Amino acid sequence: MTKTAAASHEYESKSAAGTVAIGRKLVDNLTPPKLLILRGDLGAGKTTLVKGIASALGAADPDEVTSPTFTLVHEYAGTLNGKSVKLLHLDLYRLETERQLDSLGFEEMRTDDAIVLVEWGEKFESIRKHADGEIVVTSTGGDARKIVVTLN
Image 1: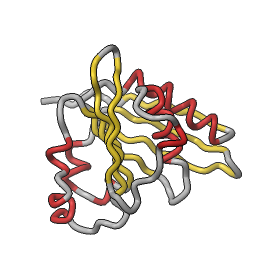
Image 2 (image 1 turned 90 degrees about the horizontal axis):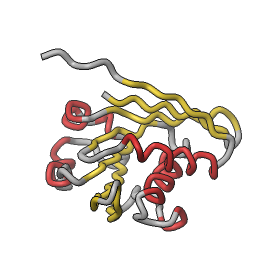
Image 3 (image 1 turned 30 degrees about the horizontal axis):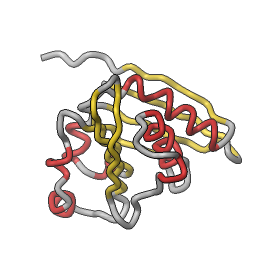
Image 4 (image 1 turned 90 degrees about the vertical axis):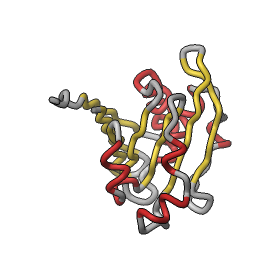
């Protein structure tokens, strides 16, 4: 079986509000089921981008979306194209092994109605193997960000 070429899109933001707006735009390309790795340094703006995605789905107001660093998973219920959708935002920074990931119930999260966004997912083979792409957020100075979205 031949894999199709990945589609890559690049965005630039000059502020946190701009990063939220880019997140809102991305929703059109996130039809479930979707598993994406969110990559970027600590403080790069990954959660800020998720704020826009959650907002566009009607799942949460931007100020209600926080990093799941200590809870590991935040789940939101929204709609996309008139259908119910689950948005799961994971932060695996504190996890180190596939066994820890299994105990989190990661496989059960990947349902037909789910968009799963995983910070630090690149650390885990099982996530890299099943990912539909990645979103890389890079600080370019101050509040400016470069956001590259690659969908397989």
